[in-house]
Amino acid sequence: QVQLVESGGGSVRPGGSLRLSCAASGFTFSNFHMRWYRQTPGRERALVAAIAQDGGQTHYSDAVKGRFTISRDNVKDMVYLQMNSLKPDDTAIYYCNVLLNKNNYYGRGTQVTVSS
Image 1 (cartoon, rainbow, N blue to C red):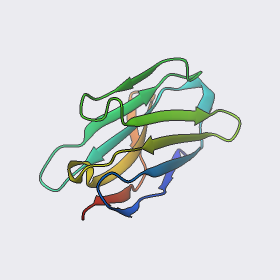
Image 2 (image 1 turned 60 degrees about the vertical axis):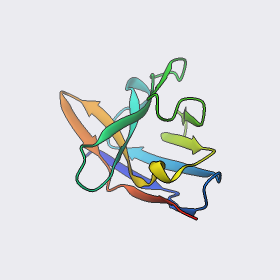
Image 3 (image 1 turned 90 degrees about the horizontal axis):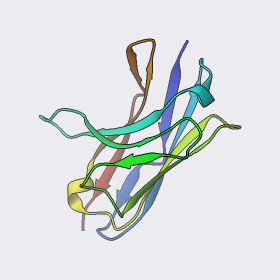
């Protein structure tokens, strides 16, 4: 079965950095786009970044463009989100996502808190 396991969240001060990781299993990882979403209480889950199968194309939300970098390792079946210059507004639960056979799969998420 499809499994996505996020890690790497934590608490940082504004301006700090974190690197999130997502371990994928249960599907042919290299065949699918991968995405990172985030969600705060009372708000819908929002797309943060996406990466194509071979990593050649990426997409970022305007809120994180220039600060976050998505990458993937198709040998290890991992997707990463490098987050720099973090702001309090980046505080959220971050989820790894894959759209597979018209179904969206998410992991349990990892909490990122940016606070002074």
